[in-house]
Image 1 (cartoon, rainbow, N blue to C red):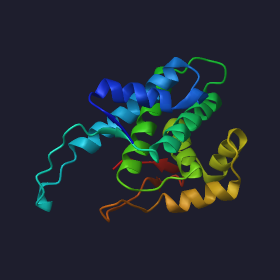
Image 2 (image 1 turned 180 degrees about the vertical axis):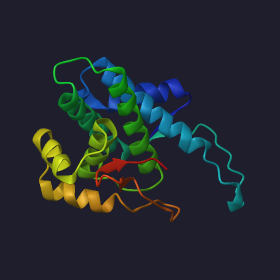
Image 3 (image 1 turned 120 degrees about the vertical axis):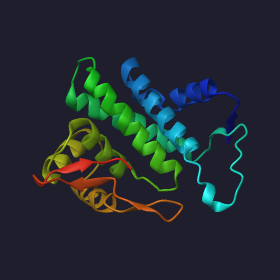
Image 4 (image 1 turned 30 degrees about the vertical axis):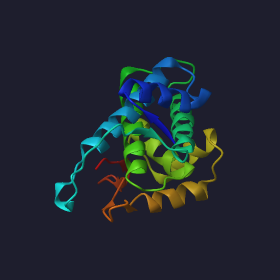
Length: 186
């Protein structure tokens, strides 16, 4: 486990942990910003009804088990961007969506929900590309990531009810009125 005294030190470590998969600086910056936002939300989500004092001292940490998730966020972020804007610099809307994707994944992970590569891929494609059918989702995700359509189908099922460490069950995706899948935040 790595401990950091400042948010900036944590930010630098997150950027390094994303790996070399998020090649473009704009993509890396969006993903780092999203992880930081997710961490900030997690840190501010203090539940006073549990009787604890909720004191936080020096808790900017990255655990060993966080590293693979950060690498997957980087890999999926780069893959999603390659599908949306191949060979081009990501537009502002894509950068914002990438940041939201990283926030959702990090916040969910840090609240105790295990996320697989397929689940992170589904969240990434839905967050950045917007609503899509399961067939389109399977085709896009399996074309740029080493995933089978069955993996994507299972991820779609599990992301509808994700149980967090505190027992809360949250839907991370839902079908809209047009029968398209959408990512949603909680």
